[in-house]
Image (cartoon, rainbow, N blue to C red):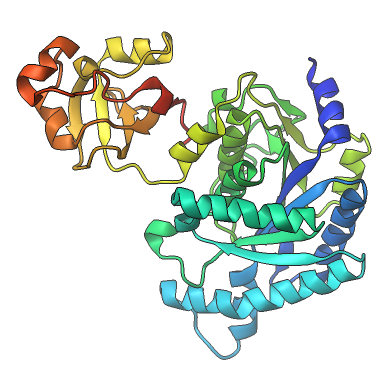
Length: 380
């Protein structure tokens, strides 16, 4: 299907949409821009009136808190940032609640840390909570729980969180609102007149380092993280629409057929939601470095990873841990659940399956990582 037809079909038929808005859109030097909040909620209310479920992922709590505390407190370090989030989050939700109520919409706050999605049990609990809210026709407003998150539990930015929520709520479209008008073919910080892109056919093929600048002044994302999020969405078979969050009625106009922003096409063959959860909701505990033969078998042949193809094991992990799979040059090509401890795997590096019993005894898996527990082309 041609991309314009695909875009029209998805925008006309989307049943559930995740919309992400960042600090660079929502805030100014004076704090949260109430006019942007009102514009955004009005547009989402119109989308909601069409019968579309809406999940809003919103940054802005820390920025809002900083503005309140500016005259009395110096914010430095993680504890201060978390405290500023506690001050700002309640104010941010107050703005949203009032704005949505003007349109007769019920909103709800959900704060998450990576730990909430890392545990399969808590992941399912989160999914059930969202299901109830959406059944009630509420609009969940989601943010990372900056108040309690510690470094190893942070999503890193709300682009990453939003991409993971696509899997949680089983959305069929991801809309990412940015301070730019869309994605440019060149880095706007280095090219005077960058060329805007109406469509990205293959987001995995992009050289993001060349295209994207650094992080924004008030947020933690930038276009780089937005395109990483689009890559994850594409793996799930979900398209992404990257729009300006400050252009008047951009969401309504896009859903009405106007060609705004950048359309990022999904992959033709989606990965399973189980594999997606496995790959992106936990931190890898180690790295398996493989030879060229294994790279070819995994990438081209759709095979499992055998001990015979592993040349080095990095890290110390237990059986069942999530590990990265890397080439000898350091390129990460996949992640998966390892059937061996790191110590046992080091004993059988390069060995054929028939030789494993002589070293480790009976009941050994022939695969270090079974194909069913392996996701290739992982987004890192």
